[in-house]
Each structure stands twice: as structure tokens, then as C-alpha cells.
Amino acid sequence: MAKKAVVLLSGGLDSTTVLAHAQADGYQVYALSFDYGQRHDSELDAAKKIAERAGVSEHKVIPMSLRGIGGSALTDLDVAVPEEASEGIPVTYVPARNTVFLSIALGWAEVLDADAIFIGVSALDYSGYPDCRPEYIAAFEAMANLATKRGVEGRSVRILTPLIDLTKADTVRLGLSLGVDYSATVSCYQANSQGEACGVCDSCRLRIRGFAEAELADPTRYAC
Image 1 (cartoon, one colour):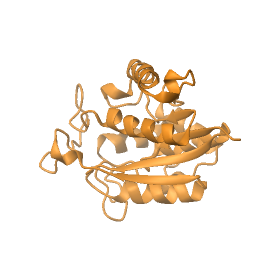
Image 2 (cartoon, rainbow, N blue to C red):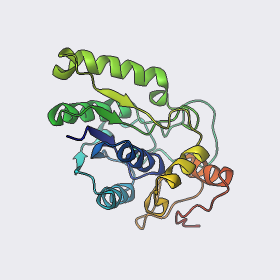
Image 3 (cartoon, helix red, strand yellow):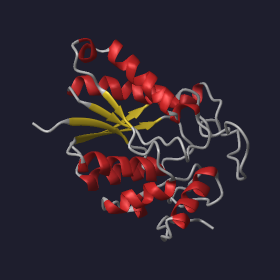
Image 4 (cartoon, rainbow, N blue to C red):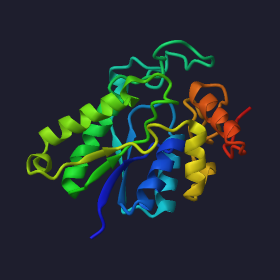
């Protein structure tokens, strides 16, 4: 039987690369996305399309609303998405988002008896988010194997982060080597209803720089 993995799939560049990487590593992929009250649905539309094209075993979209606690430009429409670089942890950081997402992924992994959970975090091009660091991933994995039936029985679940040490340019090169079609991905924090990117938010800037450093054309559609 093929080994199973839950892959967190946002519809963006990183998570799509991770999905392809998991499949290339021989995992039977179960994709997991979240409708968490983000500013737009374009990334979820992209995630559904990407999961279908990849032929994953199953794709779940979990509805939840982090707008109830706010605290982020991605979940509070009264907080503007910054269009210039800033110092420190930016307002696009969503409090506890990766912890919530990984916890639900862990639950599904238990149900599936999956061996791993993949998440597309990077400690290099990560915008300063504290829940993208190796220390956080290691701590969550330790907690996961203390808190689950599978872990207690000695069959640990691994939290795999194949992009953790990669720049965005490295990620793009990896994805293209795996046959990823980046034209289907949506990375922008404030994409419009057609999935067109703003080109100026932090996520867009990282993506643009990544393709430029890789000396490749970015197939994303920009509104401006």
C-alpha cells in the first residue's frame, strides 16, 4: 500500500510545489484547504483546480472563520494590506493560523492513518511569520506525537517541510522540475474575483522576486 500524506494546499505557489513534491516522493496525497475568512476566494478556486489536475485521492475544504478574532489584514477588512515592505512581523500574519491548520490536518491524518503532513513553509522567504520557523515545526511535531493514538503507539506522524531552507527562486526551480503549472496558482493577498494579482503586496513581491532571481517568466495574471 502507498504511504499516505495530508498536504496543506492554499492554492499558492509554495503549497502547490509541496503537493507535487509529495507525489514525487511516492505519497498518496490527501489535500486540505481552509475557507477561513480570508479576503478573497480566488486562492480556494485555484486550490480546487490544482487538486483536481494533480489527481489527489481526496480534497477537503474546511469552513471556519478566523474573522471572529481578527488581528490580521487577511481576516479583517478594516485593516489594509500593506503595499510596501515593513519591519518586523507584518499585519498579514494571521494569529495561530498554522497551528489551527496543522491541528486539523493532524486529525485527518489520524483518520486516514497517514504517515506525514506536508506544509509549504520557508524560513528564508517567509515574511517574518513566527509559525514558519524550523523551531515551530519541530515543536508541533513533538506535540503531535504526544497527543495522538498513532504517536502513543510508536507510529509517529512526521511534519514535512521540503521548502524550509529554499529561497523563492529555489522553490520555483524545484516546482518546474516536478512539472508544476504555476499559471494556475494564486499567491496574492488581495487578488480580485478573477484571480488577478495586485503585484504590490508582500506575497506578490516575494513571488515576482523569486521568478526574477530564477530568470524565469512569472505566468501569474496581474491586474495592473
